[in-house]
Length: 195
Image 1 (cartoon, one colour):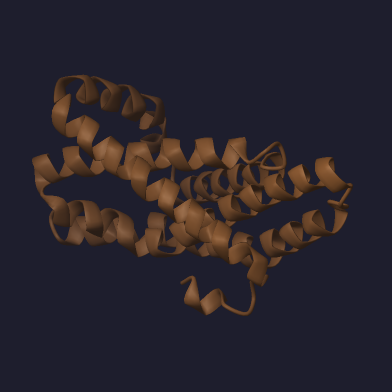
Image 2 (image 1 turned 135 degrees about the vertical axis):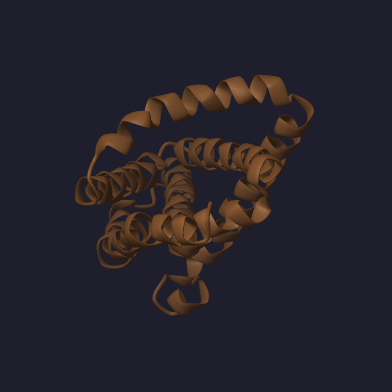
């Protein structure tokens, strides 16, 4: 997915995409390790997380699709814009989501096997995750640009415009497709395979 965006994403953002991937991978490993070493505590935390989202099971597919789509687009927008404050927000977003994903992977792999986890995340995740990483990368980049502004007065207006353009023209469509796959395809695939 990142390769297909080559030439469409401004070259200065590439190092920040790598930083975003690194943060996400490290936090995922930490989440996995924590779940493996503190399984009882993680099960309690998992129950709390699932409890907060249990209401989603009562919604129809169209409503669920819209909720997922708007949740992803709104969060990614604020992650990009608030990244201007030294990149703190995208780092927290990447770390939190990576940690939770690593924790989920360990627990689900123990209960139903790793295949069920991958089948439940890859169909939409192959689109959603790169989009989220790009949004985080732009947040990190804007944080860097803001630091440069403080040091030498560099204008942040043009970088903000560039980030906004990518958000509108590239990320929103990707989140739309990912949400559609998650709601209308992933669940049916898992049900068909007996998960």
